[in-house]
Length: 159
Image (cartoon, rainbow, N blue to C red; front, side, top):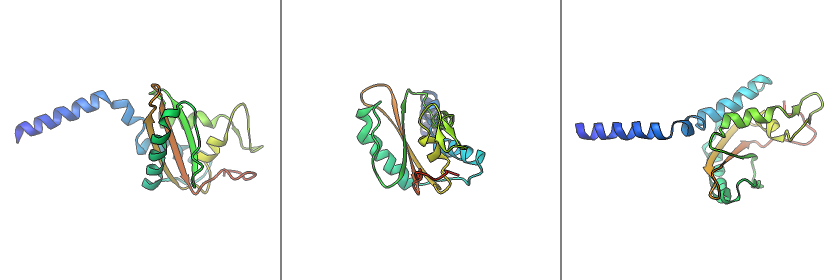
């Protein structure tokens, strides 16, 4: 029994040493915290994790991982954000990157696409599911965020 415990402990330590940032930067908590921090900043209630949305995102990401960095929306029933980037492309980094392009006063974009950010902070989107997979044709990662109910209704303010 003692040998098993030592072996198990070594495996755990090796796993943590080999993959620390990948798991820490892209955990459910990090995805939710990044979205909920953005929603809190604009006075909108938090999202909750939805395993069904995460499974949907994961299945779609696996089908599309050969398209990286070209991003193709699923056209599915949920709100969706797609991102592709290098290994340090974390869930938090992506959400914070999108924020700078949106102007609430005019409900429009400035200097870049802002629909990603408005989906993050959309008042009625209360469930979130995400997936992150390595692209099969390069060293990038493909990250998919699904939101329910879907947002980004043309002509409406997100919050």
